[in-house]
Image (tube, rainbow, N blue to C red):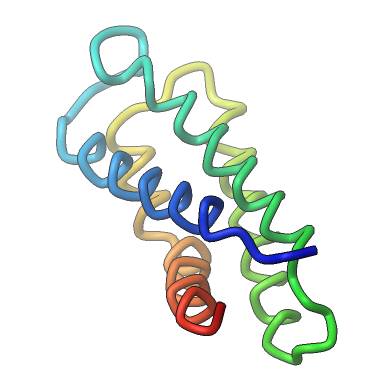
Length: 113
C-alpha cells in the first residue's frame, strides 16, 4: 500500500490540537473546545491505524515505527476509556515518550516519501 501523507498530516494536526487543549486547564471534555478532544483522539488513533497498514515491512525502520504506534495506540485507548478527558490527562498524553517517538518517526518517514 502506498504511504499517505494525509494520515501523517492528520497525526500532526491532532497533536497540535492536543497541545492547545492541554494548555486550557479544562477539567473535562463536556463543554466548549473540550468536546472536540475525544473526536481528535479518535481521529489520531484512526490515522495511526492507517499508517500501520501502509508501512513497508521490507524496511527495517518500519518495525520501530510499528512498535511506537502500537504503544501509542494503547495510550490513546486508555485516554478514550476515561469518562472525562481533562486538559491534564491530555498534557500527560502529550508528554508520553511513545507519542513523541511516533511524531519523530513520522517526520523522518515523511521526508522519505
